Length: 147
Image (tube, rainbow, N blue to C red; front, side):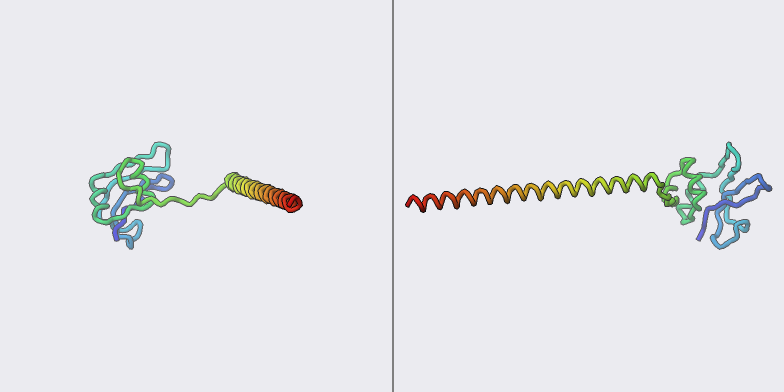
């Protein structure tokens, strides 16, 4: 499988990289199929030079860019590189965890309040029904006494 990856060629403390197409089993500093460009990093004004048409050709032929190369290409506006960039799983902060816990507590409190209101309404309805039943019994007793 072919990979589009960086190959370091710079001196100590002065990183310069080639962007190459190489077999994934070949060593990082080993043979490559084609040089696509260069990347000078390590300072504030990093420069990236590459042949976009050749990059798209190799991607269409099945070569996969590395995470770093895909990110660099995406920043330069090469279309279709987003699918090669994996999203990192970020650790949730304490503030986010506390906010989520607070939200769950509020939801539980609302649920308890709703259940209490429902129980209270049912109790009121039952009391009303028992009052009506008592009234009907009283009226039946009066009709029996009158008869």
